[in-house]
Length: 343
Image 1 (cartoon, one colour):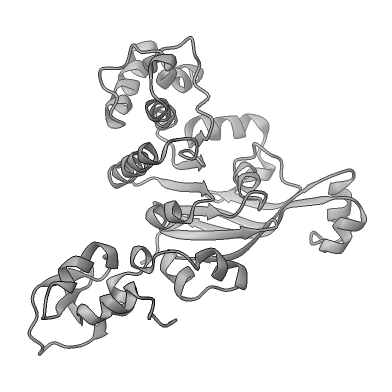
Image 2 (cartoon, rainbow, N blue to C red; image 1 turned 45 degrees about the horizontal axis):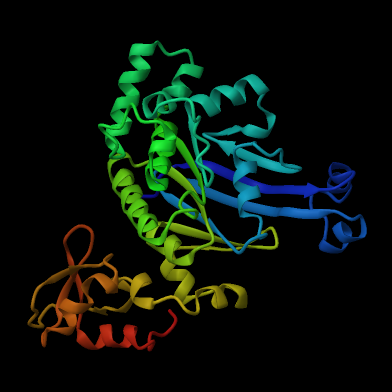
């Protein structure tokens, strides 16, 4: 059963330039690329339709200039869209009053950006509690909540430190803790780890996945790194020139790219990191002798060594524990050498 849609983005545009709203309106909310060019306008976000479900990690990715950061700012109305609808829990954010929007941002949305934006004169505890102070939460209550999320992100014992006393990864953890303090229903993260060193970035991805397993937030995550996207995402939207060209699971993007651009984007990705056991297993096989069990959703990378070392295949179990097929050494080898066919 699919989870409910928490954010529904319908035909959203962001056009920069003089008279952008008029041109958008005069062309029935769908100006062509030629029209935009003729009027000297830039279509940063063009006719985007997305549905984001409760509890999923939805990654928006693309190269620099593809429109992904502008889109996420439109979704939170940090940037005012030129047209379209953005329904959050059924309410159109584009028609809400400023006061209503402030309340939604304060109590229902969390945001983490590439720049940590910590207040240098405040401690870790004070930075984390700051959004609650803005809400008027009493000091004892906000500090108690701040201590909870500081411990959650692994910074217990550093509550009295100032940002200058922390590493880059620790500062980013404070930014995450601050955004979690308000217990948001929807969490926006715009390339939050891209300024970090590779090892720290990997650690932060691990931390992020650990937090998600605990909290089950609805997350919109922006990145230009496909390896990061496939590691974190339930679904991925690929953007090019302001348009969303495909929305799919990481596995579907690799096996069935919708355009040459998506195919090129995924060409050099290790298939073993993306493909699951279910993508390459053989159906049936109830009467075959097996060496053990693997889950249908496990990545090939995670089980490759075990399968390659076994002469016998393994039984594949679905999410309910039912046997649905088998997978053996040859299937893993085919993935590793690139012999996986499109679905």
